[in-house]
Image 1: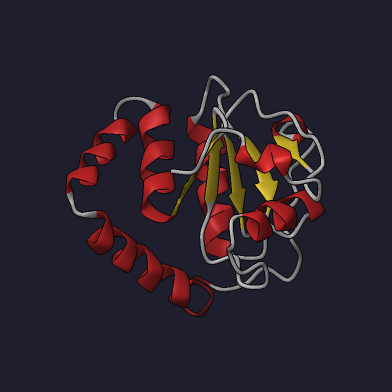
Image 2: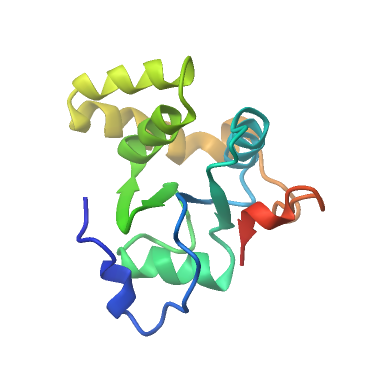
Length: 149
């Protein structure tokens, strides 16, 4: 994990509310948008906020962490000033959802190199396997308050 609030020192990143976990996702990817729809359905608290990677803020955060901002091949989870990417981020999201989804967090016993290899395999092929949206994901009016950017 990265240093707490390390993105705060980066003047290319505008201020944004980060008091709740934020999932940054590829808004053109059908798999990624489907994961967001799943979270909107099962996250009853509501706990998460969402940010499209294609937004100016999402792109700036990708660049800050050295991720390729044209590919968006990893979701980013920002929580309490910490960043989690790849399998660490996805497993933490499921953990935060509570039971029964939190049971998936047990997969963290698998070495990160193996988990991230599998994550990268899906990420590299996600657009070919699941498809691409013709427009970036847009929330409906009832979900709009959960989206940044």
